[in-house]
Amino acid sequence: MDDGAGVNFTAASCQKTAPGSDRLVDALLVSGTPDVIAGRLGAHLDAGADHVPIQLLTPPDRVVPALAELAGPLGLN
View 1: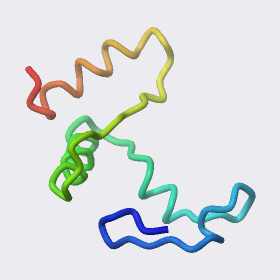
View 2: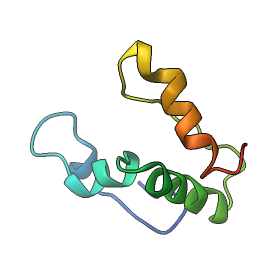
View 3: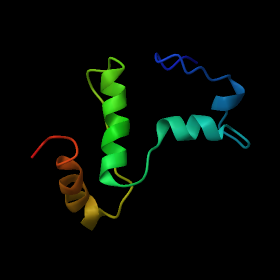
View 4: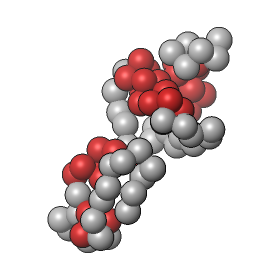
């Protein structure tokens, strides 16, 4: 599997059962401060993506506050 940015994963990396691949998970998920998250999203855009979907893994009552925290680092103020 080629992610388009030259980071290739084998079929074993993508299997649904353990052990899978920590590298694959790290490439697909990001956590950290709003600046860290915005940086990773920006890296996808810099690599040529024209859309970068996100899904917040946070309790429902934290979705809007979490998006508000990301707005500044993403330049969406």
